[in-house]
Structures are given as C-alpha cells and as structure tokens.
Amino acid sequence: MTVLYLLLSVALFLLQVLAIADLVSRSDDDLRRVGRGTRALWFGLLITGVLLSILFRWLGLLGVLAAAYYFLDVRPRLQALRRE
Image 1: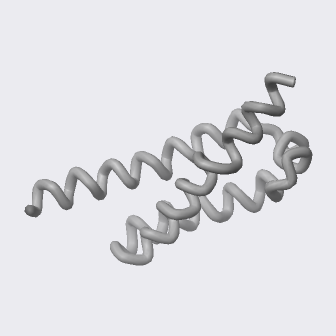
Image 2: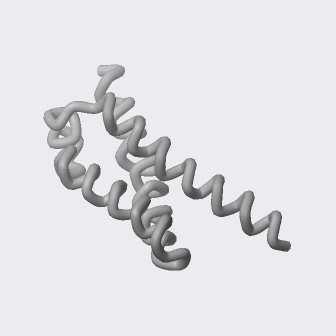
C-alpha cells in the first residue's frame, strides 16, 4: 500500500509540474482571450499547489485540482485558439 501511495503522489506531483511547464509556453494575451484569468493568476495557483504538495500532503489536493482544471478546461481552450 505504501508503494502505491508513493507512486500516486509522484504522479499527481508530476501533473502539477507539467501544468506549470505548459503554462510557460502560453502568453497572457491568450489566457485573457479565452476568458480564463491571467498568466500570473495561474502561476500563483499552480506554484502554490506545488508548495502545498511539498509541505502538507492533504492540502496538496488543492494543487492537483488546480492542475486538473487547467488541463481539462483551460488548455483545450488555448489549443483551440491556436488552431484558429
């Protein structure tokens, strides 16, 4: 059970890091055009989530939720914007 928990923790942490890495390639104007806040807001949310994951196990779930929302809602809108 401990190994499974460790693997899940690492996977969720990587999800957050990948969200930050993807955000680096996005411009503030693109985020404003899709109506999903600013780049600074998303960096703040995602980096806070990573820090919470490192410092407090269960509060790290907030960071996972922010990263999941980014990947499921914001990123698809940004990709659609680039296809236009």
